[in-house]
Length: 220
Image 1 (cartoon, rainbow, N blue to C red):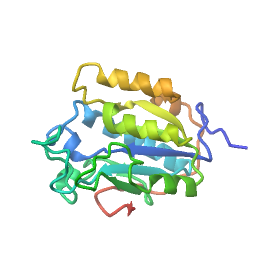
Image 2: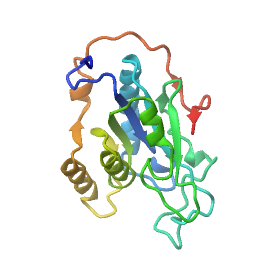
Image 3: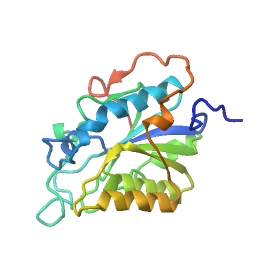
């Protein structure tokens, strides 16, 4: 039986998935999402919470070739998150656990991939680790978060969207709210820091966390 460690029941089979929390999507980046920097400290809290309870953390990233098909003038977006550049690096203040699995996506020139599952090994890693439920945070609500959650649900994973740890592009006003409504309609549960972190039972320390840019994470 799964041990219930807090009000939302984190235990075996659960994992945190941080979607595309990269510099090009933060203020000052090539494709900045308004307010994206505000979620970094909270994502760090979620990472620490999962680590302390012995649960794994996964992180996706756009890792585009220099002439990716989504780039303007042919595509909808400015050049962003080109593999190996500073813009593709994770947020400077993001702190991940040792052993975090980093999944690179959208690496083919002619194929875009908003979802963390599209053309990656993410599903394989989750199945191998016995993961059944994903807690999702990151960027952007109306694009990569939405598509990742849609695919996770279609693949049979349960999903908890961490509402206070996502931000939307809102290319059209209301896109973010519409994306959240769609995820809920598809079966995703939503939660916030108050649901997950407040009043959580104490757990054994997982050891020191490290800054993600200080040494390489486990790559796929």
